[in-house]
Length: 156
Image (cartoon, rainbow, N blue to C red; front, side, top):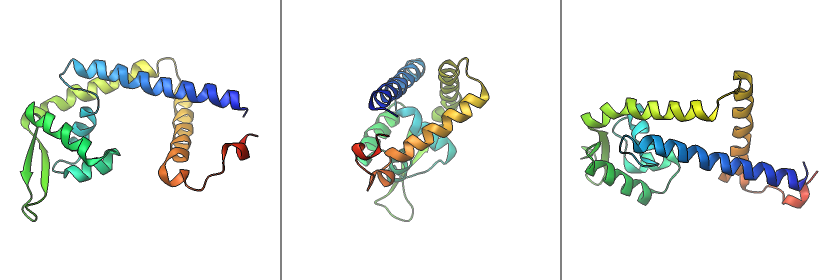
């Protein structure tokens, strides 16, 4: 692929990623959530009681970032922190009743954003897109990035 094709593709990938978060953020804001908060809520709905460190690792963010977001969600009444019974230095993050009640609203917002993003695409196209994006993600991941050839070596 020529450099100009790559540049156009990368620009479109970045624009699509940015727009998808913007659209989802607008839908989430209707329920009092900001971008990123939804990911913590959904992660806890799948496995309640994770530590901030576990959440940070699962979501691929730094622990200080997750701590700020957890504190905001706690102040809003969606989460609660409880000291670990095994290690008093550890806290476990739990959904409150209010938090559990809002999961359906978050999931609905995600579905609406997905529906908007993938409008007009067939199942086969979605499957191919998911496969391609997984490869791009692998290429950009820390493990996939180390030791890769320079751009000049892969311009074919």
